Image (cartoon, rainbow, N blue to C red; front, side, top):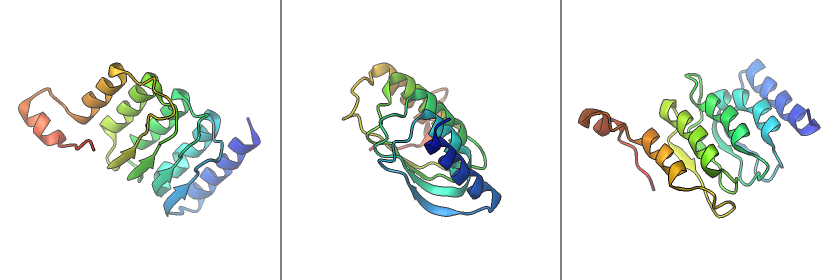
Length: 148
């Protein structure tokens, strides 16, 4: 367990213990890795409206799975999530898509593939399925998501 992850765990505990509600948690260029994101995810997702992780290049699909589990929680407050500059890849896209499908609060997810161009049609297909439920005409209409 790294000292950075321990610090993020302490921040997460503080957010939960004192029920602090932050508008924006900017952690750009903080060299956060998967274990740091795991330590932070639960507390930050439940107590922040916007989380900026741009560009923490050490985050992989493993770290994104912790974040994905947090954003699908009913208690999640995150509305905006900045993930530009993170090498997401197809595995990360699939993990994030699972979180998106169940998220009640997230309305803006910023991605950027300039760091890692390993996202293929398989990764984007996972996003497509999460954003548009094609099981029926009514489900498609009700999914009503916009991709910009």
